[in-house]
Length: 340
Image 1 (cartoon, one colour):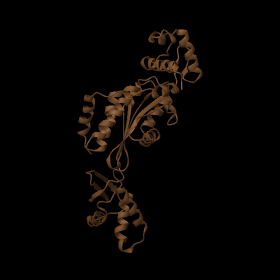
Image 2 (cartoon, rainbow, N blue to C red; image 1 turned 120 degrees about the vertical axis):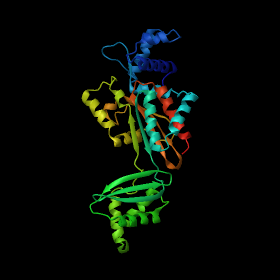
Image 3 (cartoon, one colour; image 1 turned 135 degrees about the vertical axis):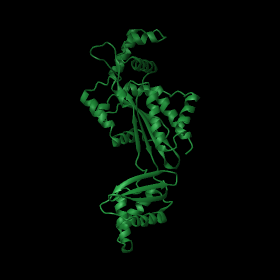
Image 4 (tube, helix red, strand yellow; image 1 turned 30 degrees about the vertical axis):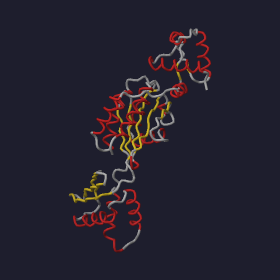
């Protein structure tokens, strides 16, 4: 714990650096204070903070630059401001027009980028408890099958499977009837578990049917809606920032942001914990070497029946933390308030 006056000076340095992006001099902080502390006294405090790892001093400047440790200390002192009621109403109005979880997640990423001018990452994570209503299988030319899955909460997914042998439409009707008769109302996760067990068994009475069902199962039948949908927006904002990265490292960073699995791992790594609680992580080099001077602000929104959305803003350490935290929190509130 820093002494109160030292903590105040550190916050003032961080705020000044966020506003200007330039090393902060003791005289700048002295002019802001009302207690007439001299630049020399503040300079001594800044030297102590540097010894503790809170400040760096660039070789070409007499001023100081806050480190990741300083930003973490600064974040702990913040409380997100309340959003005006009009903003919350706007969020709800725009999101309620998008009926599916995926559409809401995609629009949330757009709003986050628009309001924070940073990179937005949003993942819509469907629930394992989604219940099957029915499937439909339609024969297509060239040994292909259109597989359609409808769940009881209105989700419709389709996928075209290319098979190694031709199926007649009668074959597909038999498989469709078997699945709909035996598994309607089951959760997709439970169906997959049961089918996996049945397909391992040698049942002569199901030989032909089960062999053909296996082919469709291997092509992703009933594996709909369970993979997270990840949306990223605003990556172009990184181009105009002074991130102290070589062209090669910046290219490597963009490549990483294009990988869906990497983004999911990033959200999993930094947004674990209680739902609805905003998380702030400063210095992300453990996620990617080029993210050493980045920060991530996000939260997980738990929705009914096991559904959840994870949203985060990724940007430089020198970002407007109160505004970004407030935006993330209030978009989360808007998502939770929508009818499911």
